[in-house]
Image (cartoon, rainbow, N blue to C red):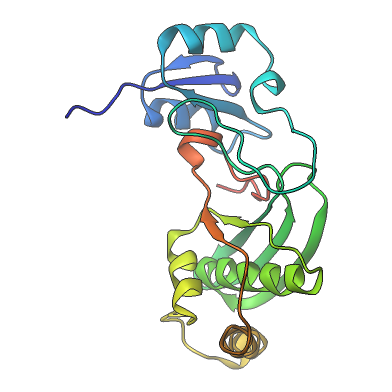
Length: 210
């Protein structure tokens, strides 16, 4: 079965408009500060959306119990949730990571910079520390990450990095050891979900350094 054609609306980017491929859309928004874009299933829907404001299509819903707001067959993200992201200058390099509420933008924590880290380590630690914080809050809302690798590590309960332990990253590996122990010792009620960048744009916690 042929893959359904998608239409990518760019409200704010290098050249606003409608694009027929993710690569074309990405060329307009990748690295563009506060880019605003979204994928739609139909041409007429995309044309109508372009005439609207961005917020009419991704506006926050009231906070409260976690719920998914459905928009078309692919659905949309859960508004009452938290999201994480990491940024690393080099590989390895100086690493930062953070967590914030997906809808309100309220920052839960920022960590770093740490020396001799990798982006995957940062994504892994960000997810686990978000889960630790949510457990303290007695909250069962989900956590989003745009890293399939880090999500897989969290589901496995193990940071499977190939990075070498060095004196410069000793604190990072100590945090990894603590995170793995915490996952062994605690039952997690929160779902860890993949942020669908192609559908929803960059994850809200994104550092914008691509």
